[in-house]
Length: 275
Image 1 (tube, rainbow, N blue to C red):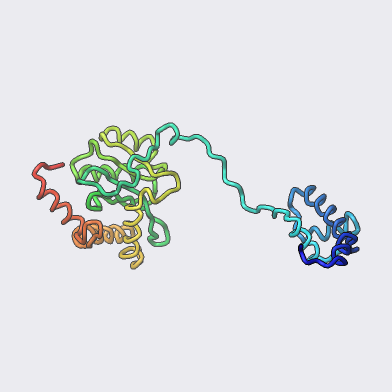
Image 2 (image 1 turned 30 degrees about the vertical axis):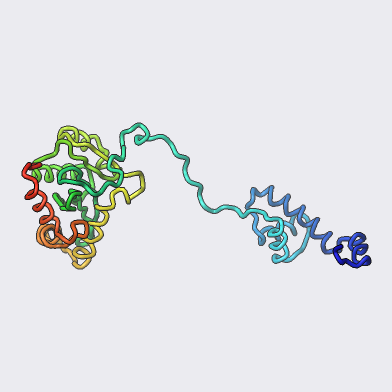
């Protein structure tokens, strides 16, 4: 049925392992013993040395490698395993993501987003905190400080509230930085009647609008200049934000309109002011 010659069939039945195959079987047993005893730490190079030392078996490194590969022995992982998840503030509902990437808002003063970035000035870093209203992507506050602390976040938020004249009911979305989760900042949020929202831990896409603004701020302004004083940095920020980004720069979200014009059109179309 299989078109196999009778002699070939009986030769197969009587066939005995070759000396090389029998030797490989014994070497595999020794390799497995050494491999298990080393907690999977031995590769072909060190396995060759251990075979010679423990069993006086002298074989080439290539042969050891082929035998280990045939045995499908898993390689030792050199990557540190991730830490086990543990319950923290977010599980208790203290850091909820209320925005949930709903970046397109129907009116101004519904959602503000904020974050920090940094720039080098005269050999040291200074930190920028900015706040954007999501409706027209308008920058409504921006401050610079030598320290990236809760006071920088607090002062920037106070500036935004003074400029907009409203705070109650505004959703304020940030990452989970210690500045925004501090007791002082949360106390201010409560006093202003605002609602706080946080990005998922280690997930910048939840605050993509803010990240995008900082990207273009550096590309179009900060990275093109060398600052020798913090005053120069502040002047540069005012020039970019108040002189270009808000009043002039076309924004795709606003169908090509700059943020100031997009907000102005909104208030012209709605007689009931939000401020």
